[in-house]
Length: 415
Image 1 (cartoon, rainbow, N blue to C red):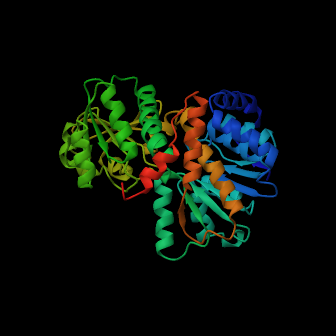
Image 2: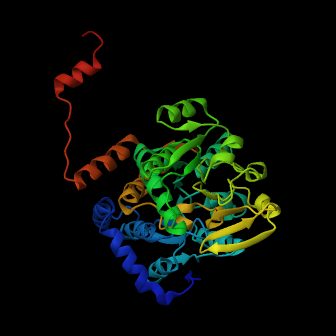
Image 3: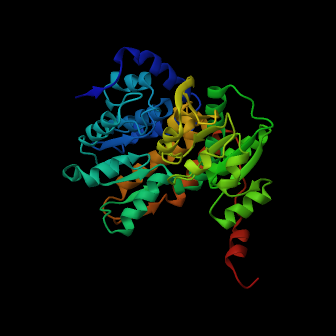
């Protein structure tokens, strides 16, 4: 199949979305021009599984401009936008993605994307790599390497590396400074609240917001909650991060205590069963639960379904669960990552930086084919710095550089 999308006739609406974000993504525009001239992806097949909305679509077009033969799918069934998928398919790309696909259909689309027999994989959460290694190893013969976007996917890859089963280099894009410091903090911080606010239409000021996990995503979510007037509670397992949260002005406590206090709960850990039955039994009537991690495992959906005596959609994308004592608990976006399941994801200007890292990371893999080993590798510092310099240039800003004297001073011990 050339494509499997919901409605190819919706392509024009998708193209309009892509054109909009393109106008706010100067780094990718520069790379599109550069790639069009140099064709670094000539004769290269790329299989991509990333949240399939307009910003991702523009990344696909930039890679195609560089000569890449693209096969594209989503990385979450609720984040795929059907008109955007149709737009890419209408331009000749292999696209296999539908909004709200069944689990079987989602993994079938992942497999169809892999049947492209890629040289390069661009993954978000690790589903492409997982299926490739576990079920379709016959499709690995062309593979040079890949790039992974998320904390969750990198956790999977490092586990594979530790077990000695990783057979190609994978770039940990999430660990680049220009990814985790800006995308995870400012992108997640804004887009999570975009999703919550547009879905609930409730005020944040004065509410107690419980943020589980104080990594870069949690920092951003808490920072924006505080800015909206919320009283922020952080739950953590890392004592250093917990101390940081206290010094940033937040309360820190165990989830079993936070469960009684919170009005809005946001998980951002990348781990399993953060909010469980025991916590749900203590929550206030009307509590709102949502997740900012990649997979819908942080809130125990099975547990809340077992506890509920009644279940109904209380508002679009809000499922209500009535407890035996009459309390209602509300879950946004099926417990999937709320910024995309209930919104449009990170702002275009943020994804411009992250996707520039992806594009240049893929180029780096091709240029260094056979030299990188079978391991999880960092984004080269020069790529990270170039992205930051490109961003500053797009704002019309300049910074100082070291003089020869200063370089000598900083490299000498005998001063």
